[in-house]
Length: 148
Image (cartoon, rainbow, N blue to C red; front, side):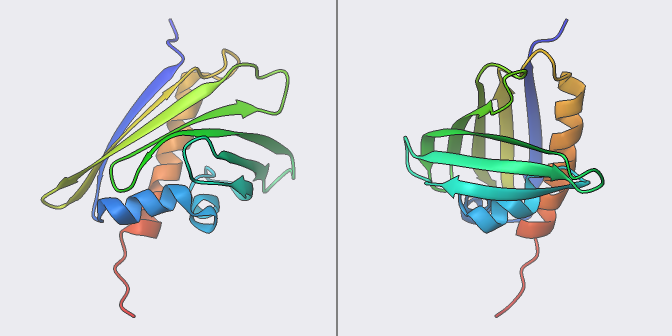
C-alpha cells in the first residue's frame, strides 16, 4: 500500500550553509533538482517564509514540460527548508510538502528529506528514483571545494 510519502537520507561532504544555498538560489536549484534527462527552469523564487516559487521540468528527449510551484513554509539558514508544491496539471491534484533538515556532522552535512502528499497517480518508487538522481547532481554541485 502506497503511503504517498518518501524519506531520503544522505551525508554530503559540504557545509550546511552551502547545501542550504542550493535550495534557495534559482540557478543552483535549476542545476540539480531536475532528474536525469530533464532540464529545469525557475520562473519565480522568493526564498522567504510565505514567498512563492515556481518552476518547470522539460524532458530533453521529447520537449514535454510540466510545471509546479508553491510557497516556502520554513527557512532556517543552514538547518531547515520546508516548502509546498502543486502541479499545474489538473490531473495531478493535491499539495505536496517537502521538508529538508540539515545537520553538521564530522565529515560534512547530514541531510534528511521527507516529501509528503505525492499525488496518487505518481508511484512513490518513481519519486525515489527521481530524487536519487537529483541528489547525485546536488552532490556534484555542493561537494567540490574549488578555490578562488
